[in-house]
Length: 151
Ligand SMILES: [Zn+2]
Image 1 (cartoon, protein in one colour):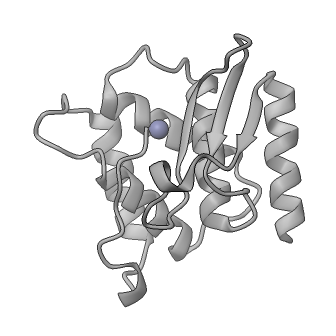
Image 2: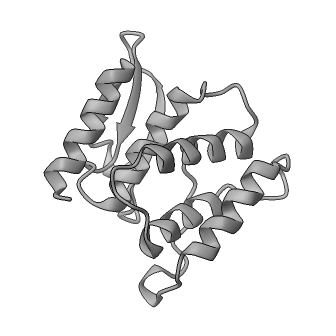
């Protein structure tokens, strides 16, 4: 899978859903640690949109982009945090054109873990997906501690 194919797949899936893709959020505000980051919402024209800190040309940035599209596909905002985030990740996993290997599952586990707090209402869906992602990923030193809040 080339980076161009990943990029085009995000554009195609977004177009099919009627969602606009905006790339390059202010890196000073949104991507201080260099990790791909995204948001889903409505743009100033009232269109459903996703904002991405990085073009979806790596497996990590690609999965983040699909996750944001997943928020629109799974009725963003109608569920509580953990339920909403795990639904969007399940959608991303299901619609990914790259097969998820240990690195990709570690990406999913890392982002999921970033929503895990005692303040968030428990979700069985979330717990199941996090367990699955952790089981299918392998820890590496380069990835240690990379969790950040992604909504
Ligand atoms: Zn999210």
